Image (cartoon, rainbow, N blue to C red; front, side, top):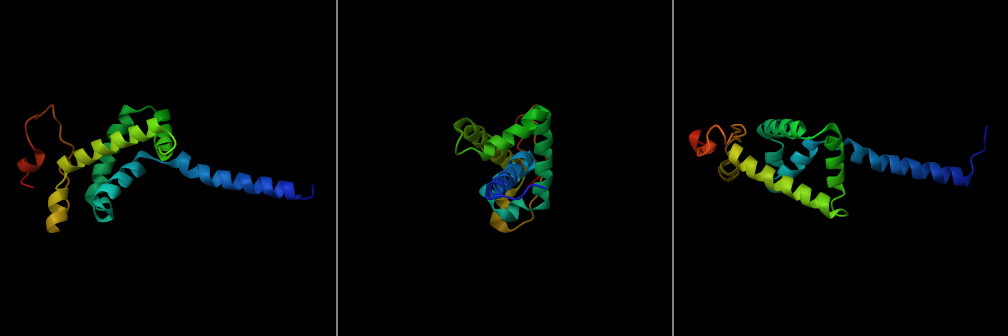
Length: 141
């Protein structure tokens, strides 16, 4: 058995720290990113609502269908490094704008926030089926 030297202990500690830091980078999913976007823009009460979970699941399904399995892993990981990578920051900002706009059209978040009503999710509107309709007006939300 080899004796433990200071060098080995320091190297082992550094490897443990690197492994601890890399786990969140490798396990970040789009659902986590979408929830963080809703939390940053509407607060934790809206982001934690059950209707928001339905919205996140629907958007994640669309996003997963548009991206390859490799992109599903690498893009959220690179978005976490946004302060260091301008391209990743621009991609994340574009996703955030799209998600906020879609959330405003797919829910009654403004009314729920202003009046305290329950958040209602009416589904992602399809612009090809009914391009001129406002889904919130149609559902009397």
